[in-house]
Length: 372
Image 1: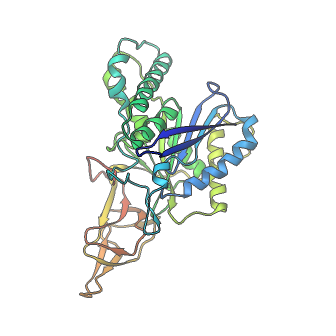
Image 2: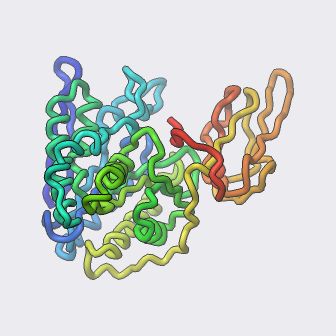
Image 3: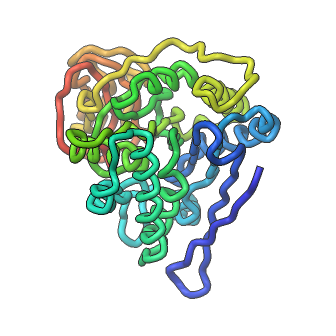
């Protein structure tokens, strides 16, 4: 194992932040897998999972047949954001920009220079594209004008040439679920069966340019631009893994989740001799456009009838909201048939506040599909 420390220039005099990067295996030997957690710095389940994963990788490094790069706490900016004795860390404090939105569009940055280099060999093109990504991101990191801009460029630079990118997050209250591109369905299914994910939400381009999509969308966009002349592979499988809810943080669960990630590494050919194979049931793969948000009809106290993971029917009451002043009590109906896979943490709500999401089979919305 090699530990690397990357310095991030501070925005204010005398300030400095650092990223810790742990590298296992041999670069260029087998698939490269990149894992990070804590990009939303108030989400701790994945951070703890990667702490346990590092211990497993320490013991299993001689059996690695791929390269594994781990960034166990990907957002030192957000980790310092606290207010009223509570951690924040989802949005950059000065601009309110979501840390997991607005990553660089690598296709736009590299397409013009790539066109005269591309060949009739998909494997050669994959190497050319990855080299172009690295070059563009090296320049972005050096020219960044803010902490967050540099952080985003550095994280992409560490991961842009990976075969697999796993970004670990969590929700408020939720079942284990993931977001993925439809480009590599076998890998999506394999990850669900390895981790025990209850649901996969699938979309080619969901809007917002989150970290996972910043790795998959460029290959798709380059295919659309050059695919009639040059073969462009789906060069990266990237996913956002939502490790349940914010309060689901305990060592026993995190250790099992880490072991499940080792099972995935073995299943994709990056680890030999691991005794476990993917054994969880296959998860439903549903369109992200079929995941519909429900909102509070008025302010008050939320009391839940449904729990994350429950199957519901259109019109079923998921919860009630009670206004303590007027005594008005209103149901919160399910917007479609499907699984209520996430719900808000707080039992107090404002009028129009987001309360939950239900994932169904039918696409019911378009445009930018990620909530901020």
